[in-house]
Length: 293
Image 1: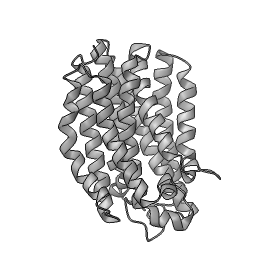
Image 2: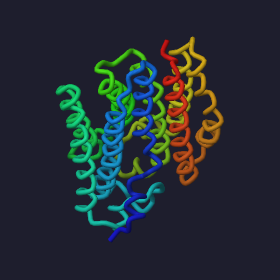
Image 3: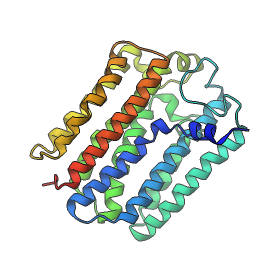
Image 4: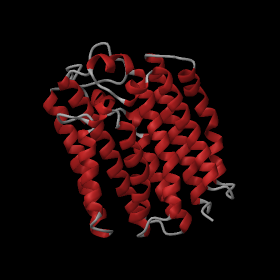
């Protein structure tokens, strides 16, 4: 029987900035325009966090029962593969999180627009079939695409929409660097797992690209986030606050570009999460301070 601390570790808290940041940035857009609805922002955060934790447990379950996670794998604790919890309990935890996201989402649907119901349903299906089902798209190199769409474009734009009633152009633009840093988290995670994923038939984008090109992709995601944020709002001195996050980009970039592997990239994953969180909060502050002019 897994302990509470093991269940928390199984939720992979280092990945949670990917769900926190887009909601914060979407709310920053609403604040900058002058029409935030705080209770809707809170519900959007519940939806995003529940989906993220749900997909983490779903991955734990699916990779565990499929045998993709082996004893050779380094990285976060895996409840199923380590036999700390029965697979059915991890399965139930995943769907409990999806149910929570669904309930919070239904409140937003009822107070915003019914077409959001379709988006929410697609998000839950995408969360499950990332590594679940007979032909998971995460095993076909499409994980980064899904992360960019759902934890970038959809989460930022959706958060802005439920508060404003429409999606301003600033939300779409701000979603791009947010999505890129979410991709960077997945890229460094999958870079670490290239050796084991290759042997078990999990053909992630990192496996397709190979070690060297995956490291270049990580650099492109991180650098692109800064460049696009600054280029999108050239007249804003406030969005330039994201430059304060550059020192946090140095350690993980050094790890990736110097060829580090294994447990060193586990540390890099945590560093990337910190970069993503600080970058996102600085971007949120910049947008909130009227940087939308």
